[in-house]
Length: 285
Image (cartoon, rainbow, N blue to C red; front, side, top):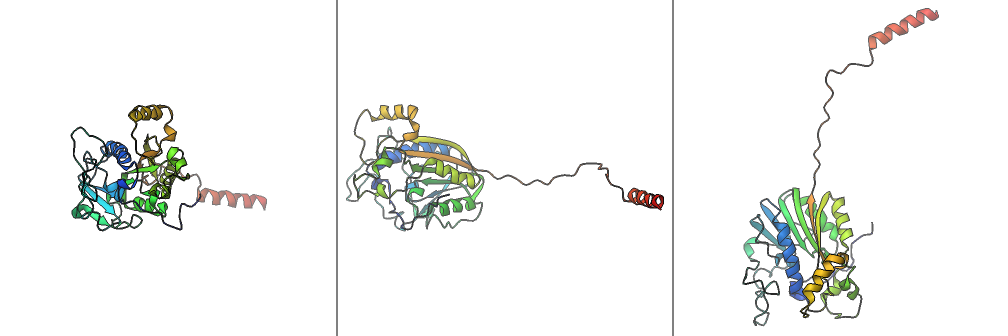
């Protein structure tokens, strides 16, 4: 298997606004992750990375959510979603109108842990669910992160992973001289097949996968007919979506002792064998 380790770590995004179409990407990923999170039950849910921390999972049955972020100032000094760094009003967290729903992820010091995703400060078998929103796309060694997730997740726990699809217009635009300073050029763009292969090697079962966002991601969507085109491509060309979201479940096969059969009859009698041997010796003499 080809190693996924990268000698030079890619630039890491601070939030979804680092992407040209970041608000649209966040809204699409948030919709799928919210649906997946409704199926996960337990006590603790961890969001790995700054992008995951911006995903709103209020519909999740798990009430204790932990934001594991690499920046110490993410919880206290970052600008509000409705304001830019200059203080002017901006779009809401999803980037489009939500019909009056102004709920946004609440990131505070009480539920925020600062650290690296490849070295989680959690005990083994302690987290019931994980969210990795494009976290592997900006990881120096995604294998280390997945091994840490496998160590910490509980038996039958769930993990949600979103990523950029290289078999898309965005994957092609990554290698073109389009907005060279954009952080999307640093994204790893792993295929969903490769991510699923890594998960299966760690004992995860792929439950479901969805394809979202059919665009280059390097430009904001301004065309009014983009929604209809998105639905058409999702139905007939799902493999070329710019973003995919995977739901996987940890499977642990219990070890059961093999019970011996009842009333076993010995197939070999030591006494009978010795008698037959002595009889044959007397006959030969």
